[in-house]
Image 1 (cartoon, rainbow, N blue to C red):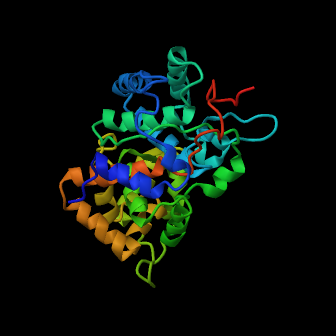
Image 2: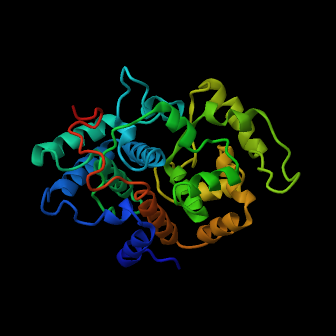
Image 3: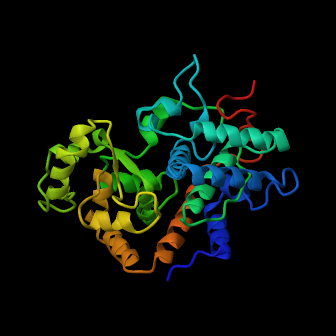
Length: 327
């Protein structure tokens, strides 16, 4: 069984942390703002209980933040007259949770002005939101600083696309210091995800031949595709939302991986996971294991994601308001 205890995560972070990531630490605000993590956790848990879809929203926003310029809160910045920001890039137009992060940051600012970064608030909120719906928790070392640059073009270039092949995904993740298993386990976040019909239209309305050549992405299950075409995506149109883990999309479980193995993954990038023998074996192994194993490997990869290209020390700034850089 794969174990990701406190010591294992700490060792992993040191190993991955040549540079700024190594400067993150547990209890970073223990003296400067001891109530910070409690304030974030209490507020997030309260709102997840009221609106459970807050959990996938915050998790996705944190993920998108870390993939562009690292986990520096740049996804939270508004566009300005000087240029469009990350949040206005097409892949980010369906992100939610910005208002919630702004409110949490406001509460933290009241307790400790100018101390806790927006990047840390987002990282903590994502962790607490997943745990609040019964998913895994993980250690979140803090000390991130906020970036001051956010561009739409970088988001378009750096974020994974639903149409990517397995080699493209592996290369993109490797550029962030993440490995193939991180790709497989972080994709498991789609167990609490939704997809808009427009984002998987290529699989819904055209069928590449399965099995012709090594690495061919298997087509969407024909019966499932027909049902989506005739019902969800026909009645709701291109913007209709479809659960990526039908029947349990607000339960953090193994349903997503079962869906992938049944060729019911909506995104081509998700279906592509089974084109790699090692990735397919990892999925088959976790599906046949107790749910705790998935929780452990997901937690490990989330800890690694949260350390991607972070800014620490004198880099960046501590924003007063998450949507704008300090004046």
